[in-house]
Image (cartoon, rainbow, N blue to C red):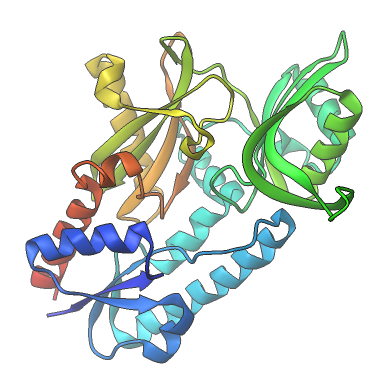
Length: 348
């Protein structure tokens, strides 16, 4: 029988609540710390879940190098997996693919799935604010999201609205320029984890260009479905072909991440028809099928206002932590434990 191993960081909610679910069913899970995983890698046949590393830096300009280091470690885990007979909940290669928003979105679109449309595909990567304005003008699309290719938790994400006739602009983002002890800007971008709204055109263009220099994708900003005066999108957690949890993220602004004081609501409370819910589940299932080696994912889905047509915004191979679940029934991690127990009992 295989040993179940969790690769992660101690004292995190991910580790604690997966451990709780495992203890409740009598499953022994060996913990492996990211700081010593290569030295302490266990012998024998194992089944491994990979949780993300924890980074202390809030610098957006370091994001690329941090992700690059993580990808190298995932490559090493793939190599060890082949040499040491390791099975994974999500394979390291699949995790690495889903870290790349551009590549994962391309794969979904090529499979014919409804996704949030990228604007820059025909022009190549957008690096300049004026270049983005030109593209928006040509496409007659005046609301966009700008997202670093590598990143999560709204780090570096910006929502931009422009009215060409009046020149009015508004930018919503958690990114801001770092200041020194005398409160003077030093030019480096940081993730403040606090949403700000900018309307001065000169300031908007300057900040937007700095964000674009991080290496970003630009997506159409769709009008989202509304509930009681809030717009919302969905975070669905799909595991082994089943949508185990789905949460609406309600917001008065364009960026819905829950850590920005937005409002969570369970899917059932929205009063959606069975047809719409079935469409969401079908789209998520097809999305999972685009990534062999993916058994658990957090999938962000928008419903277009009016038609309620679902579109995948992005997928996250490590998007299973939802406070509304772990402080409730802990369904997601209980289901992962079921998957682990089944695999090590019958998987050989």
